[in-house]
Length: 203
Image (tube, rainbow, N blue to C red; front, top):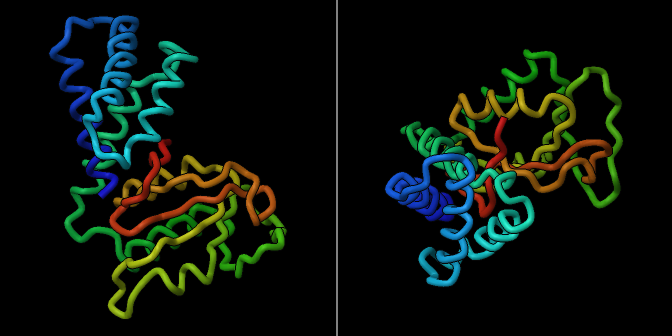
């Protein structure tokens, strides 16, 4: 799984950083920048991580210490280990609990058939969740097992949504910030086993 390759990378980076002589933010940033470059050259990790490593390399070159590589690796390790601690994993009941909790928190929640034409949602609350009804219907088998990606659209207090999802053992992945098929909403995906080839959203 992509997430386990990602977890291995983040854990290795942090372990080797701890064993290095880097002992302040500047030296740690320099160390991890070189570490990422060496990981690419040596092909230390699965090929599925190649693009992400290149993105980290570029951000380290462009932003320096501002790339926050250590914080990113710590967040990855924390998030994946957290959701993996839920023995039952993500299933239909967990997703329904998340949607119910969000609606109870004064979010506007609706199910919509998302097509190619941009959909406009009349806002009646400050935060809005639109669920792609077609992907919801296909996301679970008859036993409630999560088998296919669920696409959602968010507007408003996204951090609140990500935090509640995290508390239930669910990670969210961004596909677009606000330019999506639902006007003024960002598009996100929730994946079976919290496994998606991208970095999860933080809050």
